[in-house]
Image (cartoon, rainbow, N blue to C red):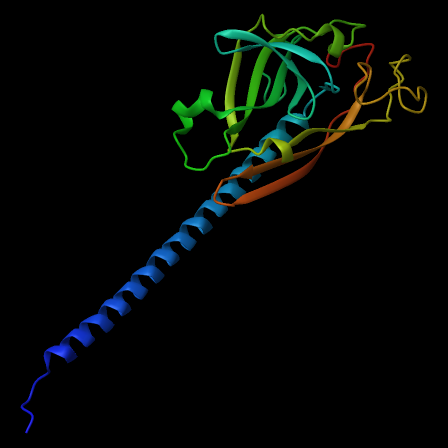
Length: 251
């Protein structure tokens, strides 16, 4: 006759089953935590992109001049001066005094430059985020630029290195090959004040890389990605004011 209780074999079997159950439960908890972290990171990515494109749209919508592609701009980058070529990964605009983002003398302008750069120079500010792309989108602000009458900024206002420069990061972990800042479109509106304004209708050789190009709108696309497979893209269309070329606006 068997006495009450469990045998050693039954105890070992029960412990083994309990171990399996605990292992499966632990794995599920880890997986759920990982999924939750990815969801939080994805939400943060989309919010960062939304704020970045809103910032650019606010600034560019007030621009009185958008630099065409292929313009070499000299600008102070920290303690040194470098040359930036406008194009896919660099966009430059001019804002007039009195606008929201340009509080300067009434005859001066503010330059804003958006540029994709290596993240290493900003690690002290951003920290070491695991799996980042290694690139960031940076905004440069330059004040007190002069735009003289009867000049084209792409040719005459292309040295920003002699005035103080401020810079800040508007998007982290940017994916350069899918971030496009130079999708430009012409403005076909000309004012009577400018009799020498060139438009595609009057000059078929004019392109968005021509110094005389009057850009009316642009499409900005920013992509953020991480090595864990998370990627987000946001695209926005930004309209700018058409500008008489013979006389700088506001003068």
